Image (tube, rainbow, N blue to C red; front, side, top):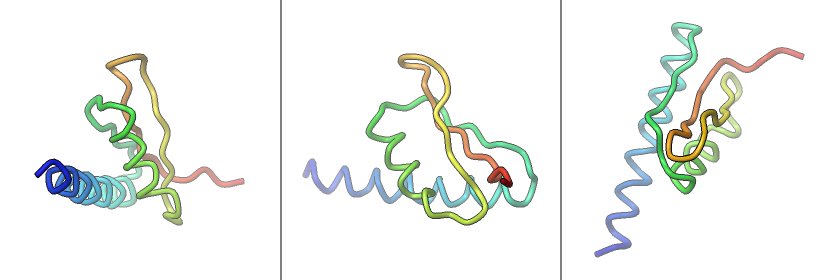
Length: 75
């Protein structure tokens, strides 16, 4: 049961990461996720790590830490 729940969380977060990347590409504006724990932030970072047009970073402190997706910086 627990493992099935985690797979659903991973799938949903992956879809959200893909949507965020598409939004960043189309608007040019950064996308900030709601604050989330380290394991979930790691999932987003890994999902978009090889993306050719966007990059991710974490910002904030403690329980307010969140992932930001933005266009890749040239150079």
